[in-house]
Image (tube, rainbow over all chains, first blue to last red; front, top):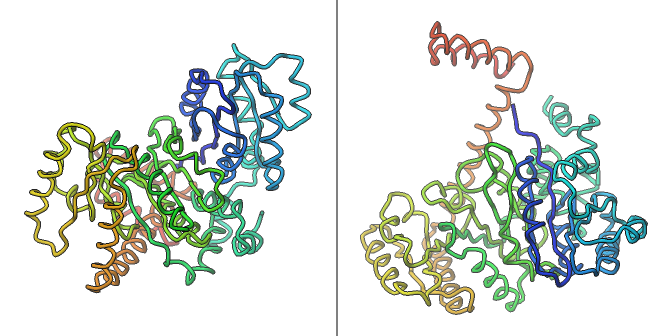
Length: 153
Length: 314
């Protein structure tokens, strides 16, 4: 009868591009799928993104980047997360104008999946639901409600 | 950071990640959160908790952002809890207050956490008190709690804050809104934001007239502020300081603390009863059975309750 815990997603736009319509479409779709979306707005530095992700204890970071600076900015975000020991706790996704040939390199440097323009929000949602670390743990049976029952006994 | 002991040690060592995880545990009603906080409870309570409430569009987040800057200039460590409404249909939320404050994100002396109401009415999240304590343990000297801001239902904020700032803007017809019971009583200090707009002085005058009718000993000041220009903040902060002095001099602070403790304990008890009523499969089945009888009008709800209650504490 209780609402299950929502997956928390940070939607961020690193770098200098000013086109946020895609990010907002994704944010709304994630909300409608029952997730909590922390939207940090335009022109974010990797430091702002990593700090926000840690304070918000998010399950997922979704970076939308259309300026072409993905090869610098995205690995930098991952480095900052790793410096705080948070890289395994957070699913790191990217979207936007990212050429196919750059995707393998990004995946080697911390990005789990890239969703290029034309990706359906349905695909993004189902990817998140099956890959978000903590959500995965809950489905696997390590739920906090079990802990609650044990402690109150 | 799997167990309470490890997380507690990390909190004591000042880890931001641990504070964030503690808040997450509290949001999930994970007993480990209460264990960690409970062990450190005597160390909490020294942070100044400021509530910021008011209708959507009044500029609460911009004002909060300006206050963070001001407090940082004073050398304080600042915590912010920004609450936004969760959709009762999807269970999801867009938590957008952070957009206006994210310049402060990389500052190690600022901790901002966004929370959804997750089904709770009253303007805050159920886990807000616990989150405030987590930020207190992090060493925040001032903690700002920004509420959803829907007007009369904003009673929660009084229960967790030392001082509540009610933010309004000219032209929303708030002079009339403010007459409605409950709204006026929530604010300890009033701010008319976007004071560069027409009607600001009139709005302030009308608010003051309304507040003059109140019989309480504290006359809430009404300050004109233009948050986006950082104008008038020092006046607003002085008003807050005056309120703080009034509360400690008159002994009201102790009374408010007692009221808050009582309110929280009763709230926790209420929540616990609902959880027990719906926890086991047998309880859920009983509720279904009784509900069917009520819907068919073969049983009234009041007698149904008396059948439900005895099972709660077995």
